[in-house]
Image (cartoon, rainbow over all chains, first blue to last red; front, side, top):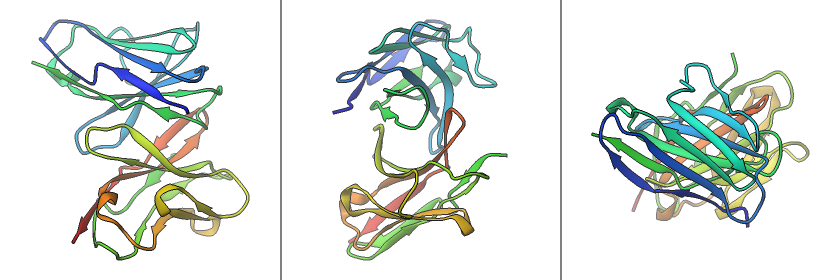
Length: 116
Length: 111
C-alpha cells in the first residue's frame, strides 16, 4: 500500500516552454502533498506544500509564479514549471501524506527535468 | 536554526562488514526522526522512523537506528552489509510542518 506515482519520469523541454509533472497517490487519499527539488549530489529541498482545494504554501525563495502547484483532488497534484530555463533542470520529487502534516510521507519515484 | 547533519558524504564498506551512518539534529523537543534510502534516479524509500518509545528502532532490510537524546543523534546501523545496500541514505527530521533532510551519505560496498 501507500504508492505514489509521478509522470513523466523524464522530460526534456526547450527553454521558454512549460512542462507539467503529475503526482498521484494510487491507493490512498492524500490530504497533503509536498514537492521537493533535488540538485545533483545534493539533498532534497522542499519547494511547497499543498492541501487539496487550497493554495499551495511555498518555501522562501521559491517563485510561485514559476512553479505552479495545483492540488485539484485528493489523489492528484501537479507541478507546472512555466517558461523553463536550463537552471530549472533538476530532479523533482513529490510526496503524499494521508495526514495534515509532514509525519507520514510517501514519496514518488521522481521526475528528471532537462531544459535545453 | 533547525538542521540535520550527516557528517559523512561518502562511506565505503566491504560486503559483510558492519555499517553505521551518522546523523545529528538540532531540536529542542522530542523529534520525529526518519531514515530514507535512495537508489540512483529513484525516489525515497522509508527505512525506519522514530516518534517515541523504545529508542532502538528496527526497520526494513535489516537496518536499525538508535535515538540518543543526550547526543542529539539518530545513527543508522546494519550488522552485515550486502552489495545491494549501495545507495544514498538520508536522515530527516520533522520541523513544524516540514520534513528537513540531511545532505545524505553515499554508501559504496566493495566485494
